[in-house]
View 1 (cartoon, rainbow, N blue to C red):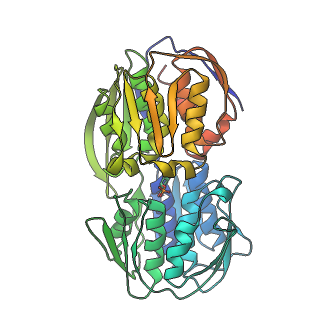
View 2 (view 1 turned 90 degrees about the vertical axis):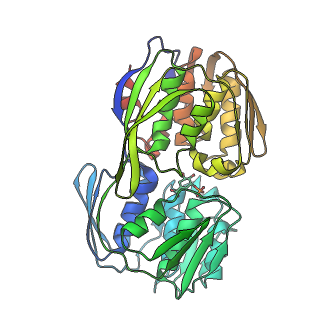
View 3 (view 1 turned 90 degrees about the horizontal axis):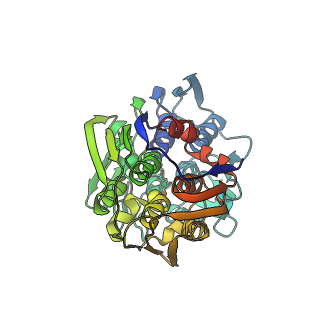
Length: 424
Ligand code: S3P
């Protein structure tokens, strides 16, 4: 499905409730599937990625039923059964990496497959530490499909070069079944939804600095209420800032500090952003975000903040390309290993509409302009975050753009356009 967009004439105004967090939805269905008894998950994401996790656990014998569009009931026996077919993780790196940690410790063998994009993504980052725990995994030269031979695992103290929540969660989940203690140390703290939810469900888990330590634990089923996804809110934050005179409120957004790098960057860029009504829901901070149209200026983005905004870098690049002055983004080389090579993809597509953006090995140098010329056909690289970032860029294009394969937004945000239209 192609999408045509051109410069927006009117300001954006009103309020929208941001749909469920993708990362938390994955963890809610995965951890509930391990907890013997009945769990209820409210506001489960209808994105295709969390649905991949849900289908995988159905195939592993867990009874998962929809009570309504966004509420699911998980009835788990506390054990999994050998699947009769390879488990399909679709486009979802989170599904493949988290589930691998669990399957490595089962008393049966299994296989994991994914779509074309997922089959190109690096899996050695989980295979190596899992093997140190005693796991047996066969891969296609470090890529899916993965064949996992169920084994008894031992806890390890793992020092990761990468700040990756998927790797951390994989090792902690394997540690849930392993003999002895497992610890994971990362250079900077990546999103900590796993640690929070495991604790909420009764696991023996603690943090000291950048190290998380876990003992073999049994989880207790819970009712989990999922907050809105700050990574989805990011497209509305950018649109509200970039469309002159806009006044919008984004409701029920997750504000876990390991995810709020985008808010810090907007403040650095001089954007008008306010946080209201902060509360805690199922162990996660949540609030409303108020945005007003703003003149942005360039800034430096590198180091500790990168894992706190890793998924928002494509939309931050759009904001920077329309900000006054220069923005430098560094230390983000892992962005090349996402659903697409996001450094190359966003730089290539923004150049087509007239942006001044130079690709670095680990980021960009962006010199802002007052507007985009547009007048181009843009590729999404089958990447949901590229599709939504280019849509927002289109709102400031002098001439119409056409975004190809826009349907990829469904991976994380099926109602993106409907919600957007409601602010016009
Ligand atoms: C995620 C972690 C991040 C992020 C991804 C979701 C998660 O990946 O980019 O969209 O849910 O744990 P990495 O762990 O590979 O950095």
